[in-house]
Amino acid sequence: MKKTLSSLLFCSIASFYAQVKFEKGYIIDQNDIKKEVLIKNKGWVSNPDNIIYKTDENSAEDKGTPSTIKEFGIYNDSKYVTYNGNIDYSSDDISNFSNTKEPKFVKSSVFLKELVAGNKNLYTYKGHITRYFYSESDSVIHPLIYKKYFFNGNSSQVATNEQYLDQLKTIFADNNSAQALVNRTQYTASSLTKIFKTYNGESSDGSTDQSFTESKKKVKFNLSIRPGINFYAPLELKESYRNPGFPSKSNFRIGVEAELVLPFNKNKWSVILEPTYAQYTNKKTTIRTDDNLYNMTMDSYSFINIPLGIRYSMFLNEKSRIFVNVATNVLNVRTSSSASIDVDYDNVVFDKIALASTQAFRGTSFGAGFNYNNKFSVEARLSSSTNILYKDLPNADLKSFSLILGYNIF
Image (cartoon, rainbow, N blue to C red; front, side):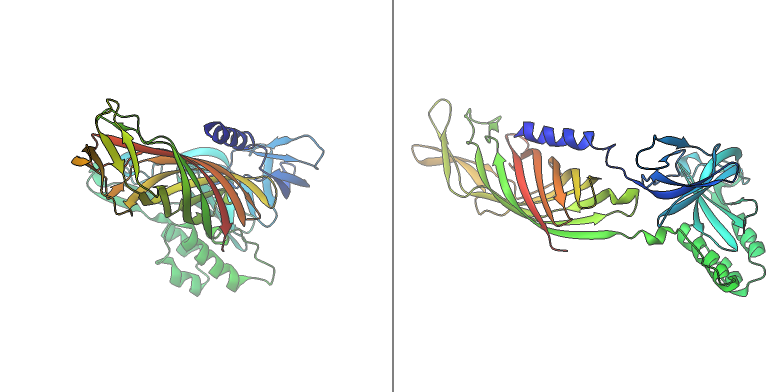
């Protein structure tokens, strides 16, 4: 079983680089020559340092950088322009705030993502910091200045340089609607996009405002029914009466998986939560201790497990994808009535080893699988040891390998 899961994980990792698609787009080189090309769309979270493109499906791959490309775009997705100018790299992490109000500019050559296009253009740069920029029509690009710092060098007093608000007042001086928004505009993509779109909408000459906004990328939600089979390893009681352990079992499980697909990196990342009902055994099981003196009896044992995790999907084509996920057990609740493992001598119970009623954050799981048409899925999952006893000592670690089928309801 473990070999099967390892093979699935290996195939998933091996296909990582092969599943990013080339999509129709264009580049404008430093000589202002526009070329229709195919660009490898990686769904960048941070601004790319370079891009890979080719002129057609059969041509060799080429690399574009800010030194060789003035602009590139992927149709119906995103547009980037080259910026050669100052960027304030002051940290946004409070533990690394500087003591000065003025931005710490560094001359840089980078790709900026266009958020709004029109008479006034808005751009963003995302790396370990996030910064915004603007230009008027096709003029020079300028940074919008915003910086948090320690006032007078006092680490208990955080101040903010909001010079971008004064810049906005100047930029939109000829538009009352945009002016009314300035003082309510935060240094965020959504807030800045709103004021730029307000201005462009009122000052438009009738041409289409081609915008590439983060709001276009929406969170997606999937809900799936997931029946399957758990194959349990022998349940060994440690630091207790010497015993061979309860035998390996296989039993059903049924889960309902909620998947929140995150709106970046081409929808490859998602958060998963899967409340699951499962049984280790549905009947009383008795074993003899190693010295053959005592009986150890466990009645039916079932539980509800709630793992929370992350999933990474690798698209093979428009309808098929391979995925891998890792999760931690947020909560485990025993649902069976049995409360202990009973130890008896000559049918007289003299010890009860208590089973835990609830457990939090015990155990992890690793899975890999295949999804077709966002409707049907199959997954192999390995769950690490989880002590089902009330105390840490003695302990009885339950671990399993699972085969799970899935059907997406919506």
